[in-house]
Structure formats: C-alpha cells, structure tokens
Image (tube, rainbow, N blue to C red; front, side, top):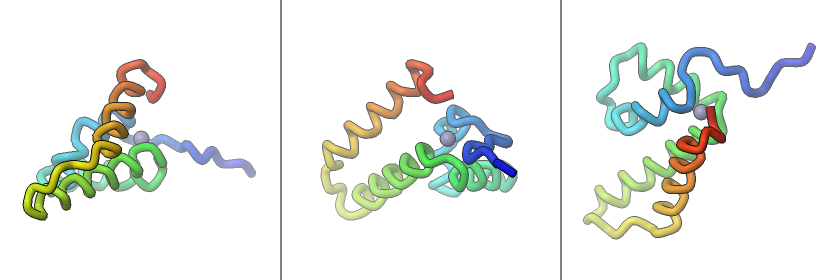
Length: 88
Ligand SMILES: [Zn+2]
C-alpha cells in the first residue's frame, strides 16, 4: 500500500508560517502547537524553515550577532515561494 509522503492533515504551510514564530516562542495554545509539530514532522519545507527561525533566535539571543545573509536570503526565497503559490 502506497502512502503519500505529503499527507497534509490539519494545518497548511501558510497556517504554519503564520504561527511559526509564536510557536517557537512557546506562545501558541496547546492545540496549535500540536498541529504545528505534526506538520513539521510531515513537511520538509516548513521543518527547514523552523530550523532557520531557530538559528535566528539563537543568533539574536547570543549578543545580537548579525543574522547570516544566507539565512535572510533563504527566508526571503521561502516567502516568495509562498506568495507565488508554489507552496500551498
Ligand atoms: Zn509545510
């Protein structure tokens, strides 16, 4: 039996991007946090993006070191892909 590796139950990528920062800050409610965690398990794109955000938080926390331009470029590219509808 073939199972889609892109099983998308619950939150969409857009939903996750909207709450990702709050989620990483621990500011979402438990149901949302579960939904985001489940989505990140299933979605390589959002999982990668959450790693980028985590890295930014770490770099901000460590003496406001400048954010790596590569990371910023990655964020911009990702937002562009969402905006252009490439990611649902
Ligand atoms: Zn996603």
